[in-house]
Length: 82
Image (tube, rainbow, N blue to C red; front, side):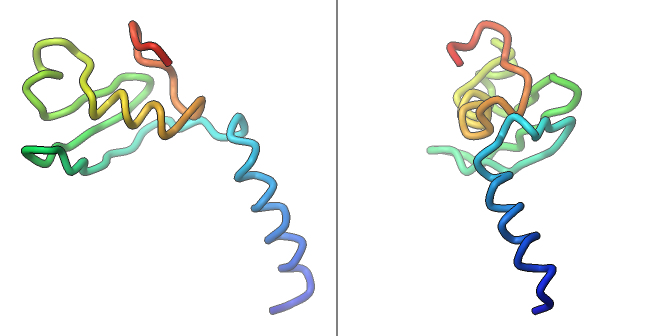
């Protein structure tokens, strides 16, 4: 490994502790639910999930969990506790 890489690794470690530097614009994820797997999507501050609860309420445990995991790296779900 070249000597410049050591500094880059340290910088990357610092970034992992500075989550406010990161703001997701969009992504998709497969979520293994208790009963079924679901597809979660985030784009431009809007969440989507394939579960029935999300269809009726526009929020669900899967989207709330993703928001909590990504703490401050996505726009908060309107009406969520986080």
